Image (cartoon, rainbow, N blue to C red; front, side, top):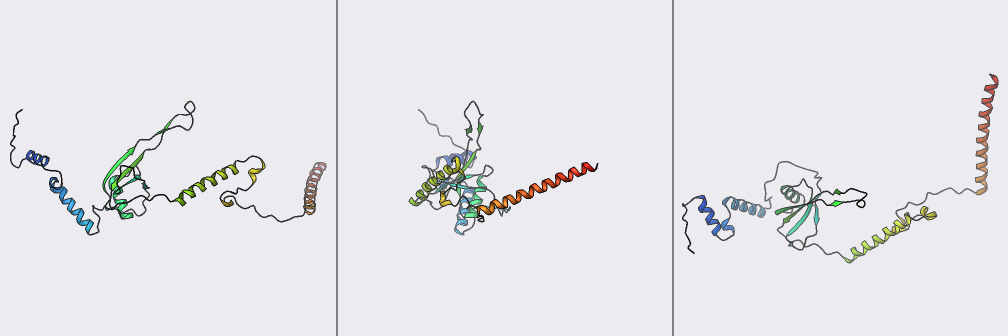
Length: 234
């Protein structure tokens, strides 16, 4: 099979593309503008300044919720993944991490997960609905970060919390007279202490109730007599 050599005009755009494609991949193939921005970023990092152009809009109380996730098996220690609001873009995350945590983010990638269909009841009784979408972003970092392993004390605390929660649920849903008792779960700190009451002897309590009932009966009788006198006078 014959091969043909195509000669392009010197300095033409096609010749530059051909040279870039034939040259080995690396910094030599980067365009002058990209090389310029790379040098400026490296210089800013060495001076401790932002490696990007800082915007003019100032936000003093950001309300966005950015959540750090555990890395997947495909991630390296130089990568981190976050859950961000759907209104966030790459520049927002880069500015957020740098100005709040001093973390420089490079090569940010975005992943928008589809909302899953959920049902609160089985199929014949409830229509399905789509849950909100989740937006994730992965960044490259200068320094590695290894997620710490969970400690044994933390796992034991989780087990204790589960047992105490189960005990409290059983105490609150117990039938009969037990439903009015204080729960002893979590050391008994959830349910308040019963209010203190003054001690009244049984005999004195009976006398006070009789006296109160007698006063009520007398007041009722007086109101009836007053009403009768009004009718008699007519």
